[in-house]
Image (cartoon, helix red, strand yellow):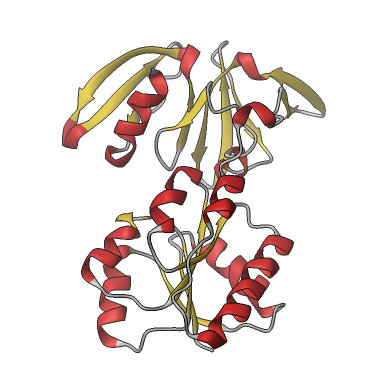
Length: 251
């Protein structure tokens, strides 16, 4: 069976590759962008199974299917659950939210293996999608974070945090007091830990707190620039593909 991984974050791709090896699946090809993937599909035999991230470095992976008629089965691997219905329209086996759980991956692979011999068009069951889109009210979200200050640990309540951001391979939180603290987490992990009515991931590097937004102005290329109450160390820009969802979140 031929398996490939399309994932723009190379550490995540290598981690998934190792997880697949433990299931006796070899993913020898790893692609990292929409452009690279389109070129590869145009020049190679299509695989049996694709593990596909949705947000790649140069756009959404759905753009691949606008150019290439991909017949492969797909297991989506993403940090964004809002794309589940769009994925449903494709030849999808499952939709795994990052960080990927070993048991969930095993179930998804078994689901593919059970359906593959029939050579039927396989699609994600609508009941599966409904289970993925868990009602936020039913979830438990983090109320506070612990950060290291010298030899001490400091607790910071969630309502004291203006934003989370990544920089130099680290993840930081910025408080209403204007302080920055390194945390032992990634933005991908925060996807499932932050209350979605309060925090929104505006791009690959930032989560912002709705209560910390001071101003919003139009920016180049149909984007938005956000001004926060105290954070001003770098531009806070809503990615173009997230602007529509961001405006909906504000309302």
